[in-house]
Picture 1: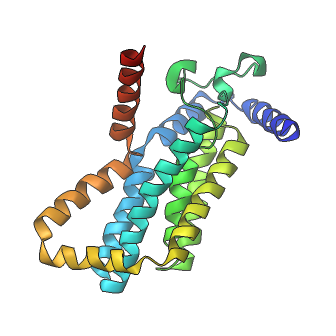
Picture 2 (picture 1 turned 45 degrees about the vertical axis):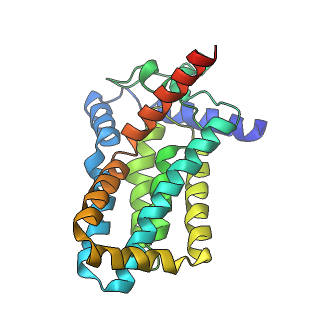
Picture 3 (picture 1 turned 90 degrees about the horizontal axis):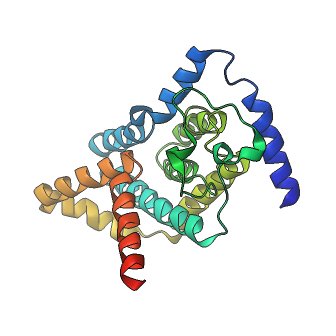
Length: 234
């Protein structure tokens, strides 16, 4: 792990030399990293597109994609909580990083750096697209790597190892779930959409909205509940 950590630190410091050369680039990267429209919203738009375009078989794959996304968020959060905490690059003063405009060390304080929740979620969803279209799955993975993960490396939110680890975790979650072939559940959800469209689409809207913002509301509620339990217990 020391070798990997040393490589992570060296790569982070090398990339950080680009920060500050162009304030405009720094600002664009910051907004790119913060823009849900190019992340979760885009992936969920793809899911809804195939839901309304495809037959019941394709719709079952869309259900799988949503379930895989939810599982990826849970698994990623459990790993962040269960593994030894890892300080994010921008929180580590020993790296001597130059922070881009609008980035402050407190922005993600309290969240372990490994694995990257973004990489875990979006590589899981990219892999979940494979049964629908392998080309689309590869394109989604490339988008996740370049548009979603790379800016987080540039801004000091994550080390490269955090992003690679998250990508592997997310892909593994999708692979294992798809191998389980839980077709009964997927097709049951497709039938439910026909039998009870009102409740189904209301729940579908809430789920896909939360996924599009990385379950931000749910995670925030969970964090506050944990803090409350700790206060009561103490």
